Image: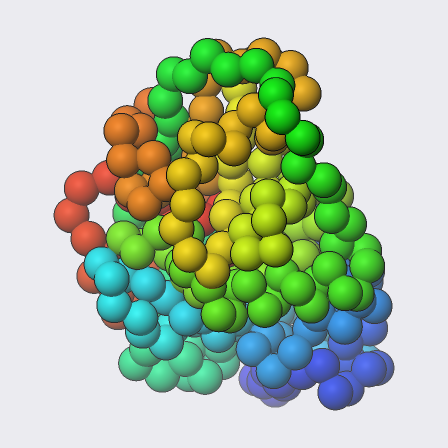
Length: 288
């Protein structure tokens, strides 16, 4: 029996990129990469390691190169995503083949991934350790006021370019455990209609935020310098709110925010990575 091998797919090979895009919705039913690829967001930082059968991707593990921020230090690491196997080929060890190829590419660098409850037993086989993530929030009674922050459309190329510039040059949203240069991950969420609106507070500060059931959810902040987020809350809401929740550890933006629960939406696993003590949350818009 021939042992399958994984091939590396990057953005230059349009045929294999299309095969990858065909694979994704077979494994992740609500997810699609086609629009993100059409936007030109797949670059050298994203690599897919796939097993092919007659030109069709049947198993995959993708790797995103990351500028991770851990306790104020920037380190180069990787994040895995789109790991899986099409239903017709499960039970043949193909997920192991692509995982080993992806991890060989990462070498000894820090690696993280987010996974659902069903595969919690899979990743420890590859040296990954589960880590808890907290939810942060604060009570705040506020009403709309001032000039509403305009909504920016990430479907527009110049907006995506602006977000990349802010993300590359600006502050990491959290220094405890976060990332810089994650704009193209955020644009993937927008391409799949999974993100809240992108609002422009100024030329130097854009925020992904929206109100649901009286709570303002601030998912990410792309800014060149720190500013008083509290002062801009009335511009980000279109109805009264009683609370603010954050998609990241908000030590810079709202030091008084506290832990309001555990993040169970996706389970974090890390490899070759020591996380800071105490509660933290890797930014939701930087997760692949």
